[in-house]
Image (cartoon, rainbow, N blue to C red):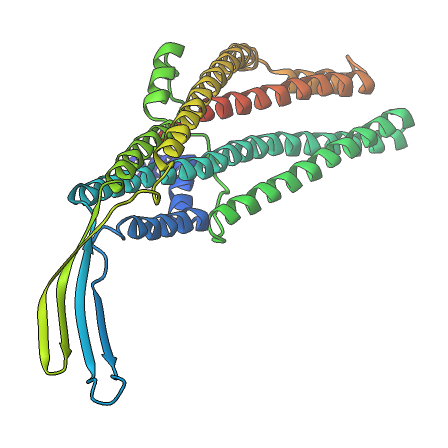
Length: 393
């Protein structure tokens, strides 16, 4: 029973260790919380929302007081006092509030778009990093194997079993492998530094970063409709049309007269006069051409919206075809490498003298080139899928 308990405990530990791998989604969650650009955008649009809420109330009241010395002597001094309040036509205030609500709504689309751009960049980097880590593991295995054969060749050469050509070939292979190792390690460091930057300067522990579970890609028609329905840029531009239309309505309302009302007091030579003050402002020239300018702006935004829809459609189409082709190639590679045992067979053949050192390293080069292409295809496929599903970030 004790043995069974320890075995179960060991299996549980192995399973727990497998689950401890860091997923890309967890990295994206941290970056969303810590990214300074996202935080700055949130703060910026909070300020803009406050700005959109200003100017919705009537103008400030106006108070005037005049004290005038009379001339010549005996003319008496004159005192005048007035307090007035100006009002736009009543419909102006409702139009301003409607415009404010639409502008605040548009801010959310801008925030979403900016956040998705940052998170997509982070996700593409994470995918690249997983690829680099997997490739580095293969390079290390090849490096260790070549170092072993180089040591064997040098030992055998002393005994007369191997030629200097075999040793030199092993050294040349090892030099190329070391170059790949250093280049790939440098790329890994740079990717980690960029992720740290995106994470607001907080270092991420990504030693066990793994690919996320693949999302099934629907048909092009369904995917295109889903992306269109969740495209924050399209929503932003459509909302811009709504805002412009509200501005046109406001401009038309502003062409209606303004009203001024208040109280006026006057005193001169012992006499006092007080009463109601009423005024009317007729906007003959102040808002001239504002409606025409907004209508032209509406037409311009409509063209931009159509251009965006056109670009988005063909971008999705190209990316969709790309991921389809990559998926076919990836499946072929996966099937090929499932039962492939090239390394072990080549090692045995070289050890038994069935192939020469030159043939061994040549075949190993072919094998590792194919393996690298396999890992590269996997990376590119996942990146293309990530770009298609950007709207889910």
